[in-house]
Image (cartoon, rainbow, N blue to C red; front, side, top):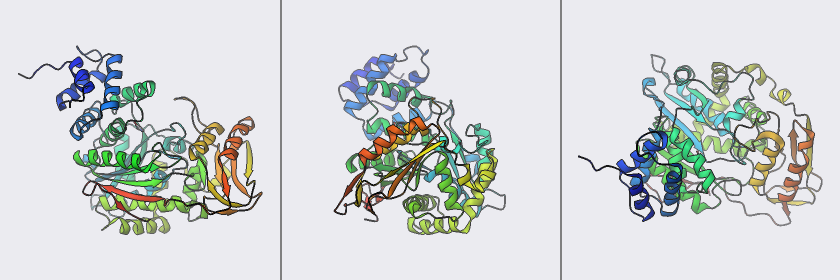
Length: 467
Ligand code: URA
């Protein structure tokens, strides 16, 4: 007969740095989601567990057990009836990061181009995305600026859309990974958000609950990222890649730089507009970094799915799909299937209707050398594009347009940013925040590359890419 499991033993063991068994982890997480079970942990005990994990860390086996217990704490999405390779991307969060809006249609087009005789796509992209968090934007908030777009499909509707369109984009359902919702809210209260183990279990339990065959992680580092240093980002990437791989999902992490907004715009509708422009071949020079990152991530996704010999071949295929117009056709299909009004894409600029705008100009000539990208993200949030509290409404038309990138030579008086808001009274504070954070220097800045490293499980030492 197996030994009874007691919450107090779990807490004392973890407090003393001893490893927990898989059964202990499973029992604890079961109690987190079913609080009426006899012996389920109290709020104080859940907080104590999280703090002990924060301070003592987890062995790889414990991390795998915790992630697995959270993954199966509620309903899971089962992609297997589709009989195709399910691949997704997850980003640790950034400013102006809209790659999901391009990746879904690019990958969908690749999958639809290789349909089986039964009409099953060669791969599918079940994207379960989030809302804006802190200074970072959220894919759902961007998609919901498209009139009629429904991000709350049932899992059955999600499956049907994937089968028809090759990709679908929805929000977290209340029944998917409920343990994470409880633990995340508690972590926020007790100062344990910044734990690489807890972040890994939180992110990977939700991604693995999509029953993915392949996953590409965009782990950001720099002034606009949650991970400020390369070392922190690499450690998190290694934990996530190890956890995904041990769970049977082909997992790769790309370490990328987030020290300025990605692309031309940051906000909600403006980011959809930028992506539609790219899908319609209106390539703006300030979107070059967005395109490079998108094709890099798409290249890995195609490679993991067996549709490209290597990531570089995948990169070229992604470029070709975007340029051919196939991604735009896939985008129209996905948006229409999710109830969105595709007529707004005919002239996306005319759908951008902020009530007020203001230009921030360079106060000196020289190189645009640096900015605190987190401050830029908070400025976007204060314009109305993000939330101060969960559940707050967000503005569709608030945001910023970037007119220059780091490393560029600028003249005194040259516009650097345009701010947009639906309320003119919201412009002053973000305008000051931006003015204070921009640094213009006489000497050219030394800037890190956008794509830093790729972390794979087979070679956790991480191979340099385009340095
Ligand atoms: N995003 C998540 O989903 N979980 C974390 O813990 C951090 C970022």
